[in-house]
Image (cartoon, rainbow, N blue to C red; front, side, top):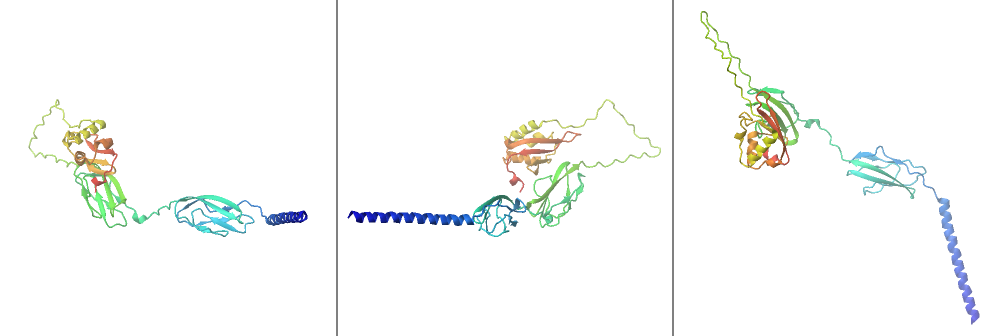
Length: 329
């Protein structure tokens, strides 16, 4: 009985030994095969024409890795992988992308490129242009020369009143008061197709007086001079921009009115006010402040422009923090 058990034990030990030897031989064979077929990784070298491209632009990649036989390209945007030595690819969104190239199934290389937004192409046919003189006098007819090539609808604002003054392609306009005005042209109702230019409106030129002709034998009337009498000339009172802003706050409180500014504007309330790139009259400004369409507390700055001769305010610029588009529609 004991002899039978010993034989069985020896048989098991030999099986284990044979199995162990077989595993060693198989492992050694696999290792030997890999060793004999191992190709060391070269430096992965792939390039593009540039590191910066635009959305939709075709990018040509090229691999220059030595010893490369098989290539797998991952362009980092979730698109389908590609193979080959020189594939083409484009990106649909801007951003930075990491490109990975796997060579011979084991060697990896990486490169980052940046894709920017597609730049708009300048279309000269969309250019808006017109010509006006630098100066004109009150009562003279202004005839802007419309140099815009393409357009169907025209909106002209000449800066001396609120709203659109003309919808003609080549309008005319006459100013009734002096000052610096802003002429604006908007084409096809598109604010991006617009242009503004300034023009100085000078006082009306006084007609030269004819000299009295004295007939033959007639004695001209005597001229009496009073050297003690000085000629009185009107000059508008001074006011600081800070005090002017305080008065506008009182307009909002309905404690002051446009008439309280009469002396500063020499009685002309249609003087231009430039606010948020738009132009309204001072009279309209007071009206909008009273009606709370323009809030006085949102006025950040005021710049007053005066006539050098009589100190009258000719126009003013207002820095405003708020939305005013509805006032000019």
